[in-house]
Image (cartoon, rainbow over all chains, first blue to last red; front, side):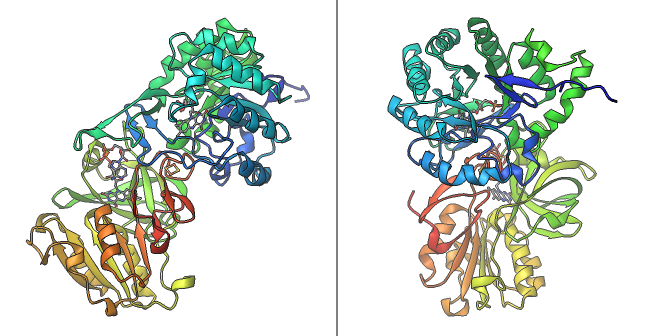
Length: 305
Length: 253
Ligand SMILES: Cc1cc2nc3c(=O)[nH]c(=O)nc-3n(C[C@H](O)[C@H](O)[C@H](O)COP(=O)(O)OP(=O)(O)OC[C@H]3O[C@@H](n4cnc5c(N)ncnc54)[C@H](O)[C@@H]3O)c2cc1C
Ligand SMILES: Cc1cc2nc3c(=O)[nH]c(=O)nc-3n(C[C@H](O)[C@H](O)[C@H](O)COP(=O)(O)O)c2cc1C
Ligand code: FES
């Protein structure tokens, strides 16, 4: 009735309020267009757009996709039109269908690349957060090497922080021995948040041809198969740093969201689930209140403890 | 593209390893011949893309070949089973009557194996718009041949080739092509080596549309899992394809 109630699903990410914690993950939501044709994507907390680099990239040869039990492998190789095109075309187009701050996912092959791209995106009012991907397993010579070495990850963090006033979230690779050490190095270098996990390096062989299915030989595993690994890593990172952590990896239901938040995630990203069901995030958001009721959760904020 | 629930009304074996499935549900989601549907199977993570063989207001028909685990599972699906389907995926063939092809009234349709199904709805549309359609169908052998009579029943002239010579011309579709002056455009779907051979065999001046297959993550343009380079850029087979115009295709890998 007259009583003003706090939004039960509301969370805060690096000082920016989100209506709910559900964020489609980079690379599984393009620049939003394909989904905006299907539902009003303003119901999302926000979304993380396709990994964007300094120069346009065609990505890897096909096949880029292989199936796994409860998951998939991808070796897209960061196909994107380049930051200048994103600023000139994708962001203006996005204005028509998405009215919230968007998360800009950035990749690079050198510290200078990251700086170039982040500096440009820093000037875009639509961008709420920079999610700096130091973890892509599908490209040679860059990407993941930054994410597997604490010093390199810290160097990227420091360089990017110097050119932007926006919150910087470092996206980490699970393909490391000690995830907490890397997260701590990023925090010490000034990161405002951490997101994880990117995909786990894997491969499949075609029994008929006896050759790898992916043209790139290896690719990144994601989907429900990786959820327990992701949950464990988020749990470890949350306990190692005091900045917010965005949890992802295999989330496909409202209950997965709650479990990830119980591990300490401030918000969650949903990746592969969007590909299998384009309405996955909408469904998760709609099912959250009932799932919260079921487990006696009044507000998502209370899970932060 | 629309997501919907479809109910299996028929699932029958047509030829060796070839099955036909009829789905009751919104057929209007299919807006052009050559589009595909993307089916969620029980216990398999990714959807399976299968071409639309036929569609009307209340149904969609597909023809599938048992290739791996998913298509093998499908053979055991019984009528009455509901399926979660993305329907009307991809661009589909551009038919006589639309834009640039409006003057071309003598199309040739060439299909190989399970590349044949999407040509059926195409042939129906072409014939309805008054085009004289010739069809060439290629199989491995008489055992796995299907749909020949269905194309004849539409009023098409049908040439058949089989690799082992057990049906029609011995050889490939390229061995059964009609004279080049009897058609003014062509449409084709089939295995990649067949598509390449056709591009070589058919005189360069004749416009053609080729339907491609690629492994897919999403099937609706979101993941960049199916992108290939074309002249002047790149295209997602699932959204900007699966049909590409002859002049934009880069054949070299
Ligand atoms: C646009 C399009 C239209 C198609 N139309 C038809 C059709 O009308 N009839 C038909 O029989 N087949 C068709 N196919 C091929 C069909 O999608 C595959 O045969 C099927 O996905 C194999 O699944 P599976 O589980 O049996 O094989 P598995 O090898 O077990 O499948 C594992 C994974 O690989 C994928 N995959 C394997 N082979 C192919 C392939 N050739 N193309 C794409 N993905 C593949 C599967 O989708 C799945 O994700 C089409 C493919 C595309 C891209
Ligand atoms: C097809 C595909 C493309 C991806 N592209 C990117 C990317 O460009 N940048 C990035 O940071 N992560 C990318 N990822 C990783 C996801 O954002 C996410 O970290 C990972 O898939 C784990 O989540 P999930 O199990 O929910 O998919 C991609 C994942 C997939 C499946
Ligand atoms: S399969 Fe995802 S873009 Fe084509």
